[in-house]
Image: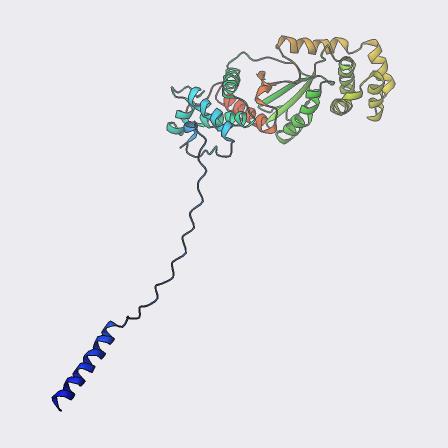
Length: 319
């Protein structure tokens, strides 16, 4: 090849190689960005000031409102367990895990907190409730015809009530349902206790005693409460007729005051027991303050405590 031509070929080849080397290299497309992972749902923070409620084995109070949790936490920090150990309720729940009393006390306090009761009032109510077990018991002589349930039941629940008392009227279905549900454990007795501000409470109480002697105490008891808003002597006599009794005889008994002395005896019985009003409840002669509530749950709690107390010879069982 001639030198001149060889030089031209080499120049062309050099230029081609240079152009190829400078060409951009095709790159693989970057992978699409992965979708961001969905963050876990945040755990609701515990209400501030509730450290005493945290870490208690087998008990969770998160369903309570933040305000109720704060009040309950204060109770757990300030009140001592009634089992007799040298610990606050919260310390007993965490460190003395075998204490059955602490758990019952905690449930009782939690119900109070849930109802909006402040910690100071809860502590007072708890103190009075547990002190009542060691206080002297009242003794009541009640006609068995004014009682329902097993006569040999370990617990006798006595209620003093006024037939015109609206609170007694609300308590009636709760108490009767509780008594029927626990008929083998509880003997439930009712005692008329007429209050002076209720004009028809005395004839109503006498009518109940008269109906008792006709074998229909509880039927008259319920009828009087169901008609509490319109009681009068005339109405009471009508109720007797509706129960299949002889209203005319009841009217004569009311006019003669046949049951006045017996009714007064029952009223004196309640007065000696220092009842504060109606309804008033006594479990085996122990006054059960209704500031703890009058619900089936509270009655069942009181029954459980009373049964435990009685089974351990009037003391709390050691843990």
